[in-house]
Structure formats: C-alpha cells, structure tokens
Length: 306
Image (cartoon, rainbow, N blue to C red; front, side):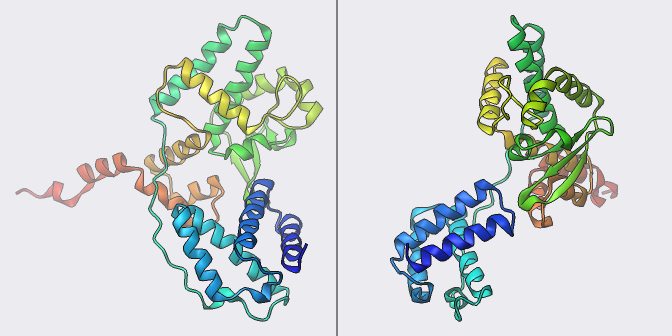
C-alpha cells in the first residue's frame, strides 16, 4: 500500500469515526476513491496536478451521467480538503480548478393517492385472507412498515435502522437518525397508523427484543431494505398496479401532499431531515396541480370586469 492509499484509508476511517457517515456513504466514497487512484497511478498526493485532475473530470463526464460524475468529483475533492486540513499537503490541486456543469433537474416521482390507497388495501386484504399464521404475521408487519414509511416520509434506510426505543407509541412519535446521524423527531399524525404499529409491536415483541430493531422478520433478524423492496413489488402485483413503485416514492408523495395542503416548506424541510431548503424546494416543481388551482382562483385577473 503506497502513501496515497494509506491516506485514503485514514480518511475513510475519519469519515466513519468523526463525521459518523453511514456504511452506504462510506462504500460509495471507497469505490469513488479507488477509481480515482486507478486512473491516476501516483503514490503520493503531492504528485496530483490540476492538469491530471482536469483529465480525470473530463473522463467522468464521458462515462457517467452528470449526477454520478458530480458525486465522484466531490469524493475526490473532499479527500484533498481533508489532506489540506490535516496539513499533509501545502497545495490543494482542486484550488485552481473551476468545476461547473449543468445537471438536469429530475423531478421526484410521486404515487397518486388513489394508488397508495389501492396498495394499502392489498396489504390489509392479504392479512384478512391469510391462510396461515405465518402469512398473517407477515402482512401485519408489512402494513406497519408501509404505513410508517408514508406517515413520516422517512428514508428506507432510516426505517430499517429504527430501534425499538426509537418508536414511542404512547406519545405517537418516532426518533429518526438521518444522514450524518442527525436526529429528528416526527409525530405520527394518524391514529390508524399508531393502531397498526401497536398491533405489530405486540405480535412481534419476541423478535423485536431479540435483535433490538423495530422492524424484523419472523426469524428475528432486522428487516432489510431489499426485503422492503421485494414486499412493495409483491403488493403492487396483488393490487394490479402497473406503476413501478420504490420506497423513496412514498417519501416524495408525503412531501408533495403536504406542500399541496399549504404546509410551510420549512416545516417539510424539518420533517424530511434536509440540511438545506434548496433540496426541499424540488417539491415545489411537482405541485403543478396545486399551482393550477391557485392561479385559477387567486390570480388578480379573476377580479377584473373586462
């Protein structure tokens, strides 16, 4: 292992212990920085020049979509910022590079509320018509997971990492640990959701206490994001929903529905756990239906007698 590889290893350890980044983010950093060192076969950070960086950036733009290229550039840039901060290098090669490129705005995909209703109905029907106790318990757990996902707008990673102590059904609140281990507490605003969560916790008490995670399978292991995705595909098929639904679309639908109900965007930002209002503002582009209604009824032209 050469000097640069050792420094990258130290940097990743710093990200884990000091910045408290989750494993998925660390894995992405690790892949990006390995790709960076593969392209630039140098043994020390001082050997990396602005000219070589510009060639690397150009290659990323040729191979990847703008969003992916931007992330890979950010990974390398963060590494050199760390090396400069630690005074391992005296000159940051990114300092003389201006990186500007247009990234297409991809609007969040939402689920129509009637489709959400059909999806949830399929789960509850599966629970009611279950032929075995195993199927009935699975449907109960699935209903609780989807109801909480939609009721709070949490990320799938946040749902799967919930601990038993994080869910307070007495106060109807959920403590969520988001990106960078930032905490936020969300109120569960639906009695129906609290009720199904209470039924689930009572039925799965043994498995929950076994692994300390709130959402578990019947073997007593934590419910994984892959299991949630498979579950969503299953009930989409049972409900004859042709739309491809992902876990994150429940989050998008949660945010867009609140925005269309005239909830202040800063409250939505807080509930979603966004560090910047700029990220939350993407939902303002989605609420086209609400915008149309406002312009039809509130526009000053409506009051002109011409």
